[in-house]
Image (cartoon, rainbow over all chains, first blue to last red; front, side):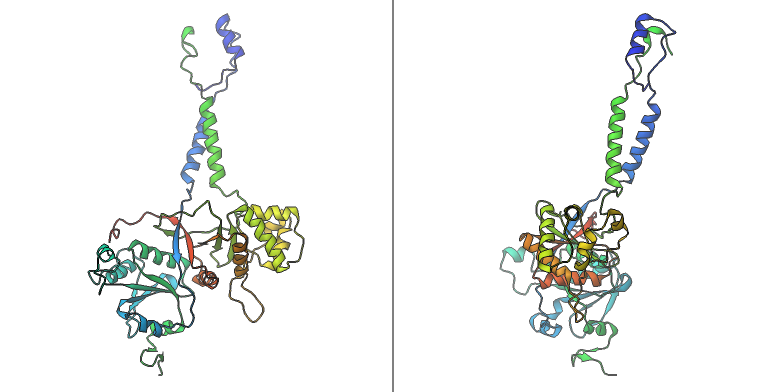
Length: 202
Length: 212
């Protein structure tokens, strides 16, 4: 099997029927084919098929003047959950803007951050982005949850992507990336005085 | 060997098969391993469940963030690359000559991460010297009192001038410190570019959690 008929020798050999002249000039390709397919299999299996996708991200316009306290005046703070991405893949979160209780969670897709988001989204049965609210008039008093994502400087970019991805998986309607400032770090430490809007005095 | 009349008949001509096998082999070798020019920058992308793709027909500016937090810039459109380079040299009064080779090199690479004052020096290096040259990344911290500028801002501005329809995408390594990503996001935001894309690896969405 697997050989090249080089034309001359073989053909004439048949006609003439001479046994001595039938020195084959065919090349046995079996081994070559084996090697070729072995290598081929190896490269096919190790090939990383680069499959990129993009996540669309829209940032709010820059406005340095606004602070959390201004935000509180505009928005019902019950709607807001702040997610803080920390070092070494840690996640903290707190509901409301003032008088918060900081809790910890993980990136686990079932019990971690996803559950926090899901719980907040479904806190009230009727969401503003519901089909009903979209096409009907029942927008009055509907549930309009807002997520604020704050990543510490030492957290990893992956954490942010995971968090944003979780938002899109849960189809959260409103979320924004905000700067992790000194107020937030004091809140995490429990040293922010919400009443006086200043660090706690020991 | 069988009897005379049957000789030769069960042999299969494998020539074509060998051709195909080697063709495929060559293809996979060339596409998988990093024999390409820009092998100096490896980006380990985080994954997401998004299924959108980067619009290929439009000019994109891609901002790379390496695992150490260095920032590199690249333009997908080759004509834009050339335009941006010429504009930068003129607008920033860069010292050095732009040779034909340097220009061709710049338009052939996918990304570059050298400060503006080293740009022409780097482009004029010999191939061997380029390999050992460490790209420090494009400075992207906001301007400070020491006179350091946010050069990423300059790249973006020139990119937009070269192609007003330019779209922006961030290709960050998962391990990159958020600090770098944040300053890239802020730079874009300061330039009033609020819509951008984050390039990620495609990942299967979890079945649970959908349809919520």
